[in-house]
Length: 427
Image (cartoon, rainbow, N blue to C red; front, side, top):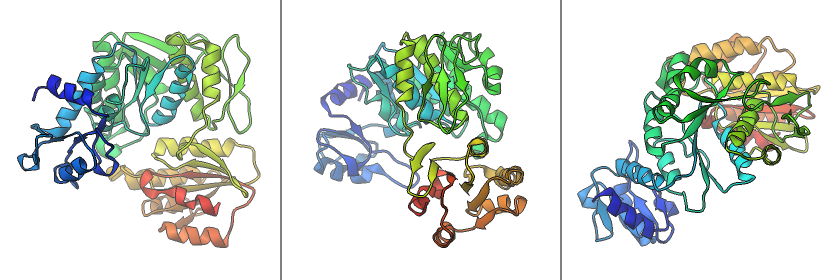
């Protein structure tokens, strides 16, 4: 079946779905395959639940005329998404980088959304499956699209760019993320720079954070640049002295207080305002938009319990992001600071070294009490004897019940697999 023919069937559907548990009437079901699953085995379930069509890549999965046989369901999904994307002439903005992608995406959507109907990647749909699914959610009513792109190995950002075809984009920063796949900090930089290479090939624009070392290193790869946040840049933005939440200002307007904490988030805020300025959004409306953003889903989320102020940043973690989060906690005004840290995953053979180095650095911060959990954090505790180490999270839960924390600012930071948010009810 040609992609144009499949696209006409897609237009008759109520959208694409890859999970039979979430099928809605009229959906087009794509039977994806992976190491641990085979969607071809659930075609009957998808159709019984109301799927209009099922796209399959195994002949045995064709059970009636509503089953569409293709050579590779994932490749077809990606081709369909690209075909759909090419029906739009609206701006497409891509976001990649080691840390802060989702927060920056949300902030950009808020800034642009003050004046435009903006589509932006839902949740963390940022990989080779999530990006196509995101693109297929676009409707004619959308005036701009903000697409988040994540990667854990070289070549992935280049592949996602070929699918989404962004007109502009940015790299939030470069850190020690997914070292298992990238191999090194330089490998991470090279992989993320695939976005700049794509933009250069299409005469697109890159948003450059002149306050970030790696942005400055990589900017030569693209000709068209729009810079922030220094006074001499295209989009100046200033961080003002403040307490828990960040205060920011742009020339000619009164400062605003945001609902985000963390010095690292200043660059995410400034980036959103730069993108808005480039696309003609009024500065006052863009400021109002970012000021209205309140982090959620364990991404620098501030939660005030009856006992403490909690910074739930437990969606992901790597050495760079943990350093930034701990440094922010160190600078907050309070008498009591606790950092509950979990394993940083996907660091490959560097895991023990990175956990050990993090522990040694944290040992120089006596004003923070460290509670660490997970098998990888054993290397952290060896470098920081003053930290309380719990190999299993259940043991930390018991400790928190016996030793309740009160009147403190508590940071929870760890990789997704640690699920540190389960500790929130104890804090």
